[in-house]
Image (tube, rainbow over all chains, first blue to last red; front, side, top):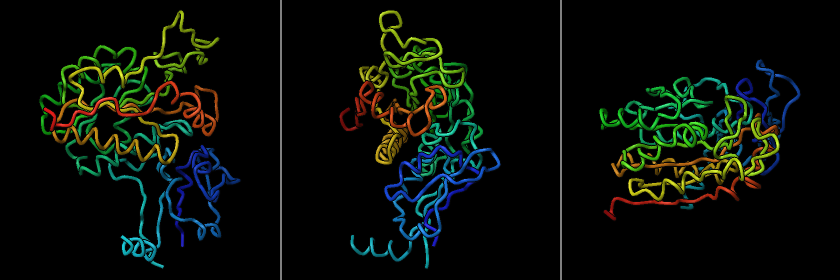
Length: 81
Length: 251
């Protein structure tokens, strides 16, 4: 399941999300996007380690990151309250 | 596996790319304002007043009505808009070159009259759009294109702390300074902006939020280094906090 979805054509490669991720799952990629920026990427195998904390998305100046959370995790959190 | 979207672009923010430089935190402040408009479900009755500077393209990025004001005059224009459209949410979005230099008179008198406005003041300690000149908020010793040896307080004066200055006026209902240099600070900034708009919704008077942001291009730093400068150099000079918060109950 994809928890972090980075819109690569919207990304300007500022790396504030790379700096913000507490699990160090995000890195700058190796190819240019259509604006000439090197967008941030997250490897598919690292999506499982993501906790959907959304720190990367909160720091993103271009609102290029969407965060998803497993419904089961959300239900567990609700039932604990 | 079923997933739910827990963080996405607010609907009050148009789905377009901004002209801002990589790492420019105008984008974060734009998003926080748009999240607040979503929260109050108020995009349809909100009128923004844009200033002059990098923040000028408000109308391209927000899905709301926007008036463009002459340099520094956004609080004066917003006064007129709010007095005519009493039920609209009216806010100005101004940089430090606009609000703290050419627009000092307008902001002080709008606050002193207690106009029912929300003012978002984006302080990046320099003139961004015109090429990084020294602003009234430039830190002592900071190099800019017009203070190449660093700001000399003996000849250039000291930086102005606008949030504290406006807090001394009886017309100001809310004045706070926040930063967006860490996820925690971004959350606090969002709360302050929501509070400032909430004061307007409740008719409590003038609300002001100063947001410390970076200008990586004109600071000559990469975005991550510029972001770290906020905690290292800018917050020690411009402390975060709420300087006045007059709730309606006290009156």
